[in-house]
Length: 308
Length: 291
Image 1: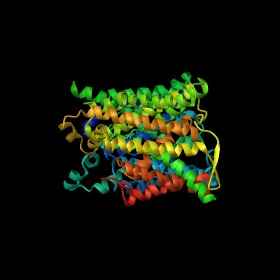
Image 2: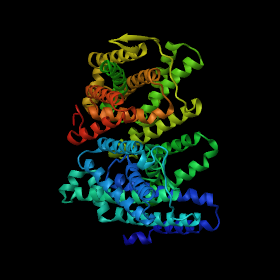
Image 3: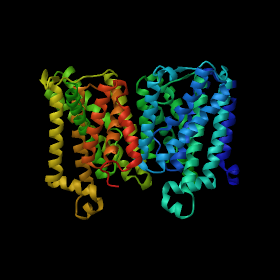
Image 4: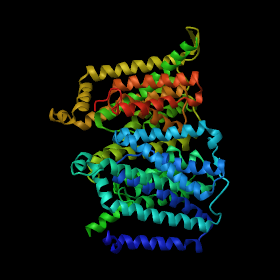
């Protein structure tokens, strides 16, 4: 761990965060708004990478955790008028409970079977939101009366700070002994168990941490948008973007996932003039990366450094 | 009266589900590939058939043939451009190939979906049916097209059964699904078997897509739900088990129809999802899974 603070990766990350923190001084509110969303998305992708890259759980439903956190916070604020910060904390807690619910099948089924279970969880949540439209706002979405702040710069700094702290915690966890045990149990659960590690306990911990950050980020995003809707925090397509971000940036790197998410959102915006072809181009680029640089951006960069 | 209606409607939709899921499970059984571009290939077939019949005016039969042909080409493109490079790649560790194939085919499916939306818009398209008109069965007014769909589905599945169990190629495919290494030791080229399977898959998905286009209509938004329904039917039946998928298709098809008629069309998919979760808990390998 101490070697990390002297590694090149640490200094590059630090420099990037410092540069990013000065952005509100000279770029437009439009760019800040875009990056704010990208930073929250980065946390989604990092939390997903902890589950997939380390615990080896193919979670097709990152939006189940995100959506539960986002909607809990949104509903408590919009329907009961609780204060913003309480709602955010409760949203994250609800997401942790959702993570435990998701972890139950993960302890029984593996691979594609677990993948489908998570996908079903998302579809169930989506159905729930549509059916209980009185509470959730249904397909139109839920309008949220309170926001954290309306200052674009402040929102940007909150998102950046949140992402940096999350990245530090998640990266630290992934490099710690816990991360190694998770990686071992993801690759060969029987052998890891034979070595005396409690796999169930470690996997549950991974689900709880991943769910906590997903839910927290989802709740913050809702209070940034001022609305919670299926299309922004629950839809399977959003989950696909989270997965693509993590694979694009480099699975099992945690930090790469955030880079992938920022790339995906900024690239989508740059390609807006191409109209409906934007998604096509982003998907094609992502597919090429998957085929030719399976390690992702950060994976490719790190392996080059390791070689030289 | 209503019971007959549910019976007839449920049969048609179940047969369609069965056809769509069969190819999907066949590929998984033989090569361990879960093809998440499945829905996109079905929609591509339906949209091609629609475009050929309604825009180019080639007639309904030629249109349907063109649709199936497009699905066949897309299936081969999926195999050669996405699945094979990942399977052959040395940079991807073997235990991670599964997730790479999932991500790769998912992205490929999105690309197909976006291209369809770009060239043919997002609007729903209904393929001109090959047979028109309605008949009365047991007091239920049923479109002839619905009966046609059910018959074609059953015929194709029967043909598939004959192909797999009665021909030399089919037996090679069956053997590959049981033990790939054993097949190569007998001197058969595994890649050739994969090409045959992807060919069969393309034709099945194409027929299912065109029939779906005639029966319910499709749009580029149907891609995700179609993939998800095939995926859940196949997992419910047991991955790789064709007979399991057939049973699961009828269970899901009838459950959805029952809910739509007796409760509300809005809740259509919920009981099937609940059943899926339930089966996952008590029998993780699915109804007829081998694991």
